[in-house]
Length: 241
Image (cartoon, rainbow, N blue to C red; front, side, top):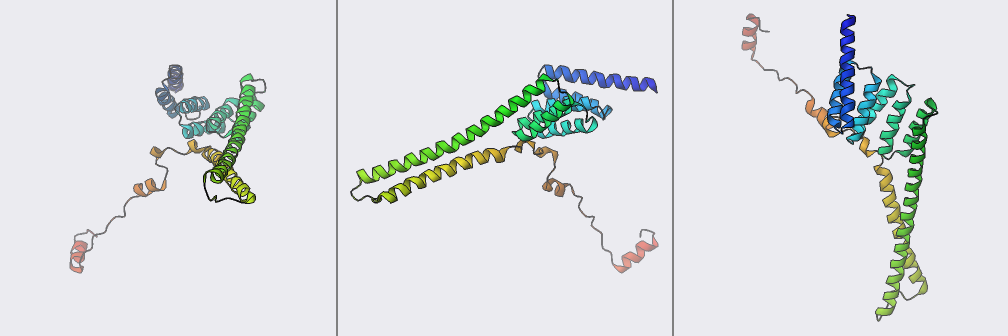
């Protein structure tokens, strides 16, 4: 019995090593296959889930990478690397607040880890830069709208015999209206970036985790054959009913 366990443990370790070698060579699909086979043999090995999470992340399979990272944390909640794996997936999915929380949790478990400190600083800087870029986008669109509005007013006044906008108040209102339109466009663009955050964490279509697949997989109700009374009596006599 002990020899069987040792043999199984050796096989799991061999598969893990093969998976790690594939990762180093950039063969992430093969690495996933090795890790998956090892997990089937040792389903409570949190290191395997962590390694496979990394391989999935390199394949841009964020949903699967997050599932494995969460499983790592579930099996071994006191292991900092599990939270690090989860933070990496969240950061790649533009979920910066969630990533900072996961990085911080990892740092609490491993307070002297320089890489975690650098990761928190990097993700914080990225979040600040994205906020500045969003604000700049709004201001640029607002200014462009204002410039276009002023240009239309000037051209209307100088190039047409009967200008549409003659009163200074109407000229100002028109320019401000286009400026407001530019602000709205800029705001919409920045909000679209926020809405897209985390979309890469949706389950892949080939997992069949949608309502349509459930309906397709549902077994069709069995059709019962109807018999006449005479046929029913005959089948009863034959012991078929």
